[in-house]
Image 1 (cartoon, rainbow, N blue to C red):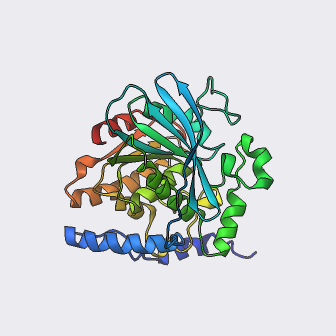
Image 2 (cartoon, rainbow, N blue to C red):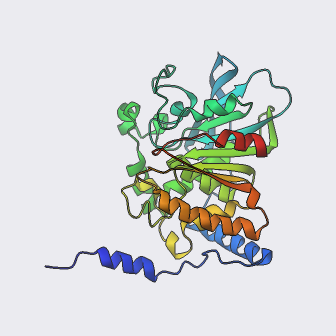
Length: 341
């Protein structure tokens, strides 16, 4: 009987020595590491457009709610690609507001994190694994924008639109098409969140020096990677994602939108997340999370500690490893933004 390929994959992974695995001992070594890894990471994601298209923003709908206003907005991110997003604006708050980009995970899109069912009706009862976290943030005085990540909700392909209310996505077809053209879904989503920040900074209500980002699961990927690249994000909370590639997406079934060709040649996941340092970073992870195992989350956090310690910024890194599944905790997250943003 022929040998199964398990050992082949293990040996292949073990044989790779990521070029930018963090081992800096000084600030100057860290700067070189950060600049080199950031450059090659953007290349692995498929690169970004050289020129930005005009945003051409518009408000699609608006509703007054108890304590805040909810708008749905649209703006152009790339040629032939338009973003839909919810903006939650707290009432009775003076001055320019700190803002948070809320990146949803797999499901039916941005409606889920702003307290809506897919049909636009108000959610009642179970808040789901994402816990309406955008609403929790606006209640604490933050202006929140929840972009509809490509492939979800109202941004699925036409052929998938009728199933989007059930949480069906267009991740597979969009991701595979992008890979054939040298792009990645992760790269497109990261770039679109960067354009979301461009839009956010055009709003008169926003304090442009106080922008944070929070994401869960696939939205945790987008939050982590965008925060690693875009230093306009001053504070980050990554929920249900921080791990190692080897112990999560390479070992347990995950959506194809998680995969980045060739990335292990350069870095493991904690190295990439470490690019956020020395900015404040909180990691949420459930001890019973079946797809991003807690042991690997602890391993990733240990590497992040080393990075923050080199920079003399250990107090800007924290974790909430809570008893629970793959879900938002919030036990520390909302206060983390209050403290640092």
